[in-house]
Amino acid sequence: MIAEWGWVPMSKGQRQSSEESSTIMTAPRHRRAALYLRVSTREQTTENQERELREVAVRMDCEIVKVYQDHGISGAKGRDKRPQFDALLKAATRHEFEMIMAWSVDRLGRSLQDLASFLTEIHALQIDLYLHQQGLDTRTPAGKAMYQMMGVFAEFERAMIQERVRAGLARTRAAGTRLGRPFLPERKAAAIRAHLKSGTGILKTARLVGCGVSAVQRIKMELQVA
Image 1 (cartoon, rainbow, N blue to C red):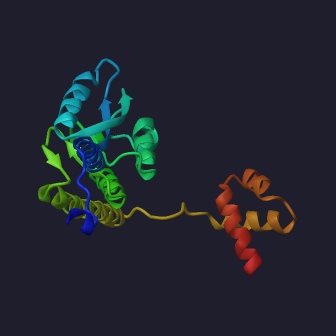
Image 2 (cartoon, rainbow, N blue to C red; image 1 turned 30 degrees about the vertical axis):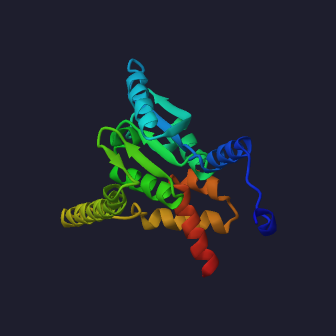
């Protein structure tokens, strides 16, 4: 009956081999993670940060593929002044890992706008973030909400900066201070026109009259339009 239906039972060895193959195919892959470590002075060390993050990575079943360390660099400095932070973001763009792990949020930066820009960039790349001190994991609902809140706070900070600039300009005007380019006396403007009409170059005219090159360039443009 078995032969008629075309079914042949497997031997014990064949079943074991099949089960092993199935186990290999379905084995979960470790998430690739990168560590970012930073200390503000040369005397400090990143060893404690790295040790604890490695312990967390083991518990989270993450494989650390790269460690980026900036020594003696303030978090207030931008990306261009932190070579390893810049390298981290470039590697993220190449999708060399799926998660970034840091000791604390202030290791990433101390400017809200810079931090929001960083979060926006890695979120667009679908890379998660883990912050040890804050207990924050962007794979969780609370972590996902943090992405949105950081954007709101960054927009608020930009609005506050703009408001302070406008208030400062208003105080300056109220005090009678003239804003914009320094006033150029008509005597100097006439001398510039004369030199330019006689064929004198811009740099030489500025030197002879005793004014800025931009003032000479502006008057030359006015002459060309006229």
